Image (cartoon, rainbow, N blue to C red; front, side, top):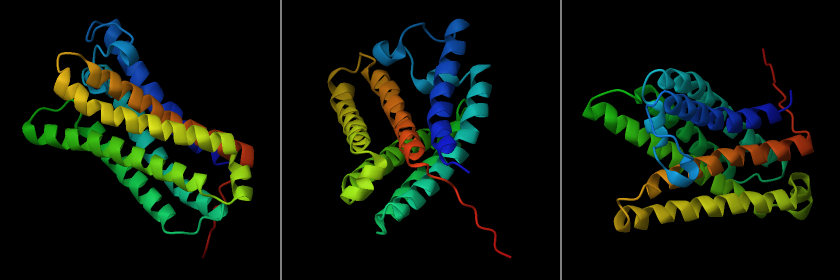
Length: 224
C-alpha cells in the first residue's frame, strides 16, 4: 500500500476544513468576509466555533488527527529506510503524535463554554501547533543531514523547500511576540495564525511529493 495518500490527506483535510468552515461562516454572516491570510478579520477558531460550521469542522478534523498520527509513524519508518537509525526519529514521531492527540482535545472542546473548557481548548491548539511545527523542523534538519545517496532519494531541492517552510514557520512564530505587544489593535495574530497553519499543513504535502517520487510503501506485517 502506498504511503503517499496518508501524507496527502494530512495536508488536504485540515487545509480544506479551515477554508470550508470559514466560507460557511462568512456566507451566513457569522464572521466578516475577507481574505484571512492577509486581513485576519477572524481567527481560525472564530470561524469554526458556531453552528453549522463547527459540525463540519469536527467531522473533518477528528479523522485528520488520526491520519496525522499515522503520518508521523510512517515518517519514523521512512527515516529508518533512509538510513537514519538514531533516536531523533523516535523524538520526531513522539512530538508529532502528541500534537495529534492535542488536536483532538482542541476540536472536542471548541465551541464549549466554561473556563475549564476554554483552558483545555487553548492548550489543545497551542500544543498541536507547537509540537507539530517542532517535529517538522527537526525532520527537515534530519533530512538535511542525510548521506548524499539518501538525499537523492528524497530530492535535494525538496529538502531545501522543507527547510524553508520550517524557517518561515519559525519566523512567523517569532513575529507573533512583537505583534501582540506593539500592535495589539491590529489583527496580526490572526494573519500569522492563518499563514502558520497553511505552511504547517503544506509541509505534509511536501512529504507526499517525496514519498510519491520514492515509491514509499506501507508493508503491514501479520504475526500469529
